Amino acid sequence: MITLKNIQTEVDTGFLYKILAENEKDPNVAKVFIEMSAIEHDHALAFMAKNNLDLSQLPLPSGRARILKLIGKIFGYDYILGVLLDTEKSISSSIIHARQQTKTTSSISDTAHVTILKNILNNHTEISGSNLARFEKRHRSVGGNALRAAVLGGNDGLVSNFSLVMGIAGATSGQSEVLLTGLAGLLAGALSMALGEWISVKSSQELYENQMQLEMEELETNPEGEEQELSLIYMTKGIPEAQARAMASEIMTNKDHAHEILIKEELGINPEDLKGSAMEAAITSFILFAIGAIIPVIPFFFLSGIAAVLFSALLSAVGLFLIGAAITLFTGKTIWYSGARQVFFGLTAAAITYGIGTLIGVSLG
Image (cartoon, rainbow, N blue to C red; front, side):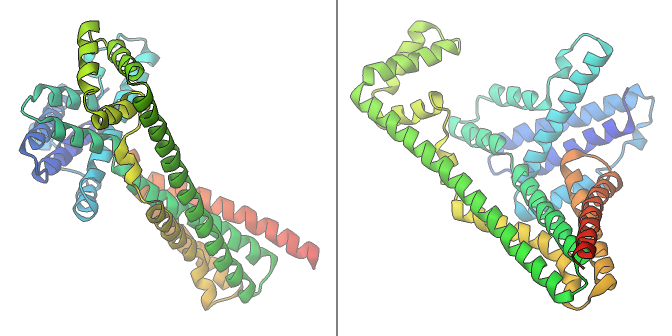
């Protein structure tokens, strides 16, 4: 069943692909985005016709799409590409699920739009290998993940510190105790997040570097074996044996190039992934968590007692709603639904800790 929401999704994705095309420096990759925009626009028109709707009723790009355009302008257009990929995968998954529920036969049109995008790329022979690799790297990195991490990092800080502050406020009416605990929770949580992110990035880099070093040692001590492994990898991809062995032999003539190919094909490691800064990731995590965590603490700088508790709950509710609204950039849900859900769960967690804190305070008293 085609709904107006489906039509709006097609309009929005076509609009965003057009934005990507307008801001893509490589003309051939921009051509791909233009074709994707045209495909999405045609889908919207087809949906309109199927529902017997006049073309004059075709909706304009939504507020969500325009916000994403603004985000792309500020933070880079890879964020838009990341969100588009999420949308395409979600649409494909929904179609497949619906067919499973209704037990209808699958169709080639069920293929995710990301596959259509890949097919267009493959058919554009004028796109050089380097540009295709650059595009696919952007495709895999999915800029939207960074934005999602920012939203969720702020959410973690807000919910955890809001609950902590409410628990202490329930146990004691002292302004200084709550303020001290809130700031301590902010610092402890932000430092923990930063250290965890630093360890995660650093350990991954060290693991990859170790594997790459071992691969280089194998390449130097047993080049024949590595050449055979590489040819077998190509054969398992469906390349004829003679061609696979010829490709492997040619690659092995340059040791550095062979090492690069082997770590990609045999280990699945992309050297670009090692360029991320562990310290940068740690600082970002610290800041994002701290921004969320400071919100419930603010009222206790100048208020105490129930007034501070209520003001803290109000500020936190606003913060939770905004975070829920930001999440709709990835989920496509309505702002009111996602925001209200975020507020409900955040306030529920805080109410529970406040109640426990009150019981403990009474018990200690």
